[in-house]
Image (cartoon, rainbow over all chains, first blue to last red; front, top):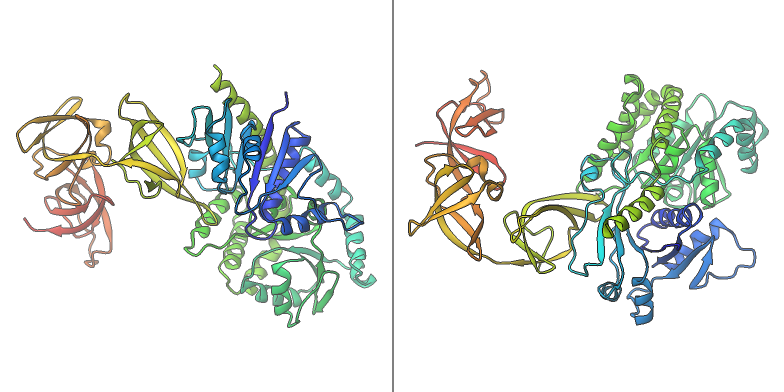
Length: 401
Length: 188
């Protein structure tokens, strides 16, 4: 019998949380034949996100409970409206996932305490390359709920011994296909943005930019404007676009708009589907990504990338960045590694990146080769959804020796 | 109730009706505002040990335990023997001294607190600050006398820690037992 999974997702900032949860839910349905219910608290954000995944021509609003791509999406009202039937329905699942440490409603936990069969409760955590992740991944969390309810912490990660990274079965071959058709697809990308013939024919550096606000941006844009060859920077709708408009002394940049400054052409693009974004990452010479979802996708795209990590007040994010650097730069030539590290640190600490870009730019071809090796290394490990399903199986086996 | 983050090694939490002594509690920041506590626990009733994780703000039921003043007497393999103020001997397993074992040495006079669960001693707490003698350290490098430059020193029981570079063999030093750090050189 197919097991039933319930995922709770609390949207904190933009579409990163829902992006990860939606990928996971879809994969569990399509690749592992699970029944999946996805509870999301911010319905407005979810509606925007879902509209980008599969635009509906009739503009019908998202129903509060409906099945999309095989996933049953439901509105997580806050405060939770405790309905015994709903709570019991959730508590009768095989697996309950609280994504990114979100807190389950109290009445749901109450219903879980009356579970009459084994229930796996997973705290699905944030991605980190730090060493302690391997030590905490898969550990139980002893709870006073019920002997039938077993809670564990599940950590995504880059190494064996962690939960791995989300990777759809066809993702790597999809990137290979896009990159085999790279020339034609890049031309089409430029053409669809409405760029001139001259630009299309030139030796253009394609960049995607999806970052948090940083003082480093203005200095980097200065460098790109003074670049010897044309640079086209695709900027998805969001905070980067507003920051970029300020740097270019414009009131705003709206999706579809193009701004020109020296060698730099900025193309504001609408928030698109996850597949469209994967393709953009696959075709660009450099991707500036942020947070968790776009960061992971950029690694699967096997292109040079810069990661803008989610900034935290106490600077703890810099330790996380350093931990990733240690893994990512292993095997890279010292020159390329130093240039990448310097730019990455400069970007994340809001420094002037003009000179740092000057050193990074010549290293892009070496970083391209390295990005492929890194992708191959990561792809040799089982993906996160398979690890989760294996975890479910092993937990069931240990509950019934 | 206390949050997982507030629980200290040596304290006892109740899980499913069983008392578990916290032997270690490590705090890690996961992402955004999320943080994790990884604990090493020992079941006081059956001795079973386990590692477990909590969100840092998970509420845990902890119990306040009886304490008695004791002083260290001698080691009778595999037990450490302490004496209370009534000269009663109290035997403690090595595992239950994990957080203070590095400071236990013959002849120590520190007044410690033995923590009881029923009649069983489950841990011993040392005073926050203790004084120990350096058994060995390399001679100081010339030049810096500010105390900011450190070097390794070994205590009589083999425990090593960083001390100021001007410390020498035979010097007495004050140590913070909560952080494990050297505080200063003291005269005796």
